[in-house]
Length: 406
Image 1 (cartoon, rainbow, N blue to C red):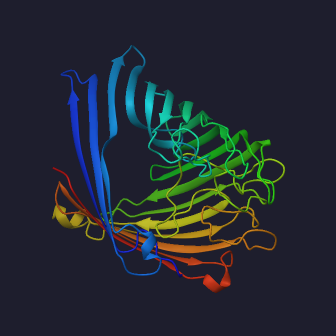
Image 2 (cartoon, one colour):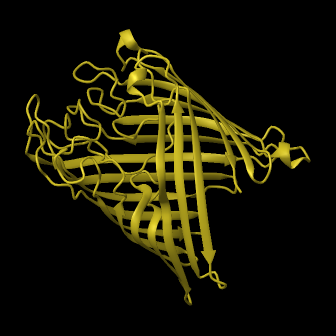
Image 3 (cartoon, rainbow, N blue to C red):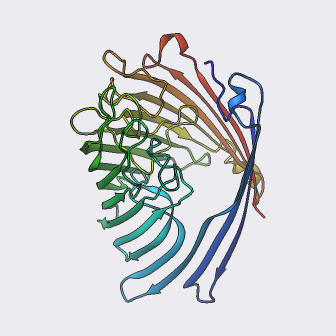
């Protein structure tokens, strides 16, 4: 309630130039995208001195890859090399742009993917306390190896299995306080999704995380490695109505485990788990969990309800029939009331409440023409008893996005 956010009253320009080339057969493709952003922030409000008035990101290739596809008797084989987007399951444990090699084999009933990827060196390390004296300070040097198999059952349901290895290649040297930092983790997951009827679909996912990290002793630095034992799950349903308004209703519940004695950092080793195993679900992906709070799935339980419709879907005019309206309601609570979450403002320690709060969002999307799109987003988060009573205040989110594709 007393600090201006970096996004408050900002105007962002995002320019992306892309090149796509394909062979005559379509089996070989090349794609590159050069992106630059420029952000102008308001100088008013509290804490304005800590916020850059004008921030420009130099042009960089955020996508750059080659793709080769080969058709066999039963399977289609696809190789992709370069900077590309990859994910497993619904993207909860892993979903990002990374550099490397990915292979996909697909048939009528089976899909298999394998990948070996390095996180972009320009990304910040998920453990913000990495020794600043080490090589390339603050940046990540993580590698990911993954495998996923999806098997279609009875033409209506899909069973999915995956494995992901996160290898933290940062030097395990201690920081100025003597604390060491490292997170090497493994993810295993099982999912089931499909259609219960022609209009009702569902999804379920269970993920377990294991591995090694450093503990964080209370009041002192730690050089002791401990085991990671975390988990997450997600399930939901969506129903489609066959009318001109194209309405849908949906509900989703997701949860990520937390650690009751991790009261400092949600993802780092500074202020992490003090005793026993580290139970924080620290992933490299996530879920869409609202605009205003926008939390990570760490020590969090989230319930989501919403619907969408096209109020002018009956119109013969394509301009009006493309307008959609979507409100969503969220309820948030902690998994462990004493532990930290991705919002450092919540209370931690003995006696802390697990009631984070609730949020309502509204999205209005409108395609004025084939190349021109409007998107209006509004959200309001109302904090609960997990926040300090003296500084508890609602957070409002408002964004208008205009996109022009040439």
